[in-house]
Image (cartoon, rainbow, N blue to C red):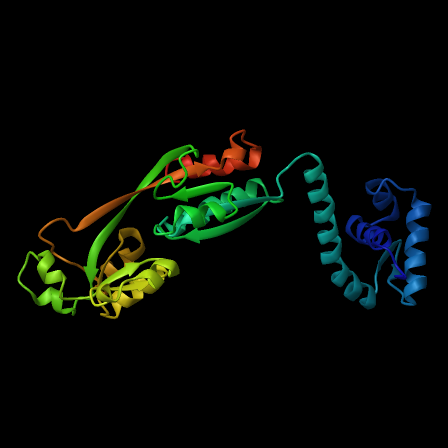
Amino acid sequence: MHKTTLEQWSLLQSLVDFGSFALAARAMNRSQSSVSYNISLLQERLGVALLQPEGRRAVLTPAGELLLAQVRPLLRDFQQIEQRAAALKRGQRARIDLVVDSIYPRARLFEILRQFQQRHPLTQVHLTEVLNSESPAKLAQRPADLLVLTRNHQEQDPGQWLMNVDFVAVAHPQHPLHSLPVPLTSAQLNHYPLIKITDQLQQDQQQPAALAESWTFTTIEAAIEAVAHQVGYGWLPAERIAPLLDHNELKVLPLKHGVRRTTALHLILRQQNLALDPEIATLTELFTQPGG
């Protein structure tokens, strides 16, 4: 058994924060004698003086300052536990499983999560990033309340268009493709590896004959680095590579037929959440607001 209680430490914290036994007792809805007794009992059980008189006030001793500083985070954590329990009792959602296609702009995603955390600090968001190539069967197995995907993998899920993501064909400025006559044709491109982004399953299923034409990576970041290191050329998200284009670390390929492709992203709500609770409603609002 512990010698001291959270209540005793909480009373000591209130005494220090409010500056007097009377104010601490009022804040904690206790009598002054109860506050005094519990703090005396706390010191007795610790065998350490936590308070010392200073005029008409009681102030912390050096030992009291040290110990209370260590206890304050514990009291805050315990308060958060009680707040979370109260929120759960009211029916507040404890967790949201969010699945987002990895091409969704990172800065926008993190801003949405920041705003959500400010409005629902007691609800955790578990984020999973997926690739466009992920199969519907695999995606269906993932726990998800809200999904942002390039297409509606499950027809029963209502999807709402969010935005278009532009992809551009790029290579390193010193890649051999940039020394060829322009505009570049598909036949010219076929002589060099195409950097593709795909999941592990599709990598494993890749036919040997195709490996000479394309190199596959399982993350956008790895694909971008591969193109930047002249491993090949690739169709990459324009917003994600904008700084590299600005600093001439990547260069747009002058293709004969279109240097830009567009992929639409949709917001999808899992069937069981069609009746929106406040937390899902907030996250939906943040994704669908202008700039979201």
